[in-house]
Length: 242
Length: 275
Image (cartoon, rainbow over all chains, first blue to last red):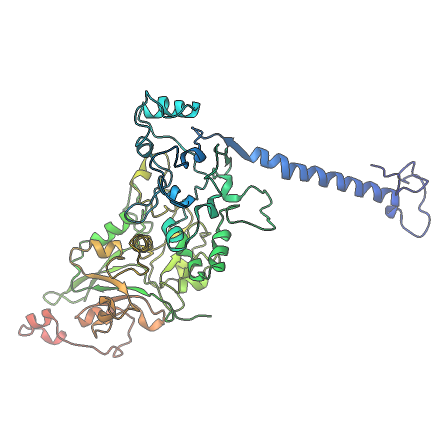
């Protein structure tokens, strides 16, 4: 590739026929150098496009949730009975609760949904999502195969109660604010590892200027928060690993 | 470098009463079930068998009628002072947690060089030669969800059922407590032992039963003199058992007490001098 600004006047060839002249050896010909730099930049751009755009597009697959659950609608205590509490977190606990032994229920089972949506024939709302939910899952008593955004690898142990109750951390700090979501985001899955992209984070580089804890869910983020909150003893391996 | 975890808050340890142990092997079974320890179709190849809790048969090596046989279970000793496995680990996959005294093993971090296995003076570490819990064969339904099954090519060992510590903590938090009480966190072998030969607790807490038991003169540890400071203590009233706990030169071992029930029994019989 020729770069007209950098090229000297005698730029018709790469200087192959002419004998070497002047102080500089032939390989230092500015013309050839410009070509090389040009090819390098072109290759860099090409590789960057492949690495930053093509590869992530190939690596991740997107899956919609089986049902588009509307968090904002369900957290509206005027419209939904049984949702109580002042703060968002207290409202979260209406469905995402702790068991008596302190373990976390995570995403509720169908049993929890059918406390209100008990009759498949008479939906409580008018949304098409509820209609699907009624006919497909409530009528057949089938569990909804939710795709869990924050599903950690098998080697990770996490105690929700230690963080939410003892550590006074909001749900949204790690999970992002789901309370006002009217639509569930797409579940982005890594084709190689099978893990959710929320674990790695949305940025392929893994670099953030001002990282929020909800941006990523990697081991470094756990350790960073433990260190910031003066809980360094919880950075021991067997606190989070099992 | 920190040499001991005396400054740590907790120091979980175990006292095994060999005189109570009947050698039934329940601890091994309970351990394997709790910790998803791999089993193979043919378990007869003992060099490849994984037993976090291993039951050894020991004998005083004398002829009838002076023969005495005993059994002793061997979990990971959770060495408190420079655990040999920790200092040799090239991948930092195993660490001594100064706050609990538990020597951890992170399977996803282990590279399988088996250096720790060679370093462990107690033979408490085992290597996974195969993937034994295939995901699609339905075996994963039998697994403890709190313990991640190991993949092939990593070393594993007893973890003092640390998932039970996590469970006990979680329960304590649910009941608005910061601290767990004695007996809330015990290992699976402790809970399963029908003879109640195993006592488990916090060695740093003088109220715990283990702290009292380790002060007893009958209590000893395996290979105490190499200085690894194990947190698994053994308890026996018989001198020949205590003597087997370390490699003593002739005359080096000073007996604590020379009376045993067998000695009493045979004291009037011929051959008594051999004791």
